[in-house]
Image (cartoon, rainbow, N blue to C red; front, top):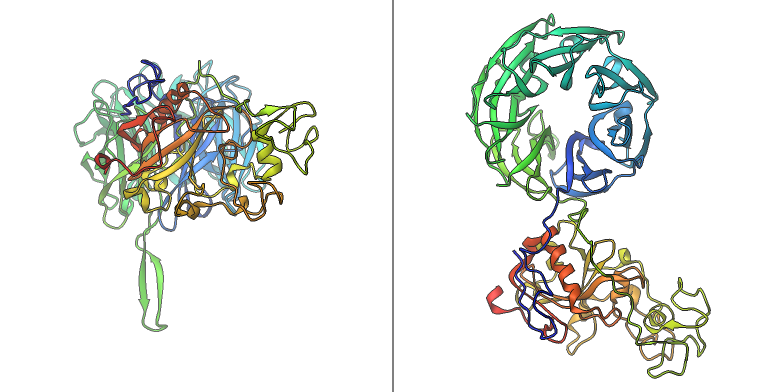
Length: 636
């Protein structure tokens, strides 16, 4: 929790919010889905809760298992209400979603299988029926099938499908079906590769084979009520289990426990009634299925009471027997949803005595099973737990690096601050002198509007003309974006001094809600901060100018972090101790914001990265909160 210690007399009571006053973070993503993309890298894709657009939330490298932050995906541009992932033609990963406005299917984005590049999608040709939900799976000849439930009639529709050869998309149609309204559905290949569409009856909660597609010619056929355990279900999932037999597992609507609702023999396609599964005995709010170590089917769910992940039950791949699970070691965070998929394959070194060479080979046939979920409190993605494919052991996960922690910060009522105007004049002879180039005023339009023909701002002219600074913040070194789920190691940013001496930073809270920090680099006695100079700010000045001489280094400015001279929410300096923020002030010559804006900084940190702030952080006016000194001893 962030606790503000107000030192400056100018910071009045109630001016800065404590952690309890800060606006709580709303869910970052409204849904998450997992699938393998290029080179077998596991992709976590979600919908931004604030804007409804698709994001690559995080991704895992298939070679070493490391996780990396994603980004906003190029997309068709429409808000989505739900999405699903599957590999389509040529192994290209397809992200298909339902348009929030019209209920129709969209190819939101897709990833090329060769280079991993992402591309914007488009509205799919479709059956024209508004959908309430959808699912994806490969059907006959590897053609990708998008199946959904009609919003008006609750019946199954082939919304759209993609040819596996050239990737062309085609409109679908109403599927022949059992004629029963469905509340949810799932897809998976069953016997002989025939695609099975299984759903829950909206009226009775029982499982139905809504429709199925022959793997030979792609013909669709009506399904029927499945033989089942006779228990009403609140949700279900499908996956192949032992010997390729398709397993339909659901949660009992009355008791929240897992049931094998029905299963299909892989040989002749006959369906059989299931039974109550041996389980951890915990009521579940949701579940997901995937094959884990040795092909054993794992049923993973969220505990309804505590939100933690459980191995509800698992099936042995050799004899098909089911076994009770247990509470999984986890990141300890309550989850609102989960998804499960195989990720990286652990590699081991093997020595070849004949060649004398050492080779990396897979330690198992399958990848390590990854359980990814959304935090119920913060909406952030977590690797809740993962299973080693070699020995089946389960391990606790962690918060995943992700695209942003601040997609939906509440900035209503905030006031931005433009450049300080005390050094603005249309008189080149003013004292102190304002930025001039060769003794003449900058013409209109110079340096992206830094100056005009009548008046100009000295701060902007100094940057653009005198010092010729690069205003693109992405080119700078030593920059940390705190609103991207930064870790303490990131914040220390390469300097061992951050643990003992204290690392001095400048920061800008931009009006796009990014909080950017950069190591302080202005020359001080001893030239310690020269270690963090930016080469692009050296030798760019005009000979003869006091600070712009070709032999003088021009320190990185707040305006550079801001990407120019537009208004900011706040700007100042911070002191980082042991990888956490210990002091925050508003010391910025360019913008000179009032101390009121420090409230915006504390709200942003509380909403995005409270773990990066000391509990007794000092927040106050620049005159009273120096960031040049050593770390407070109590913080180390």
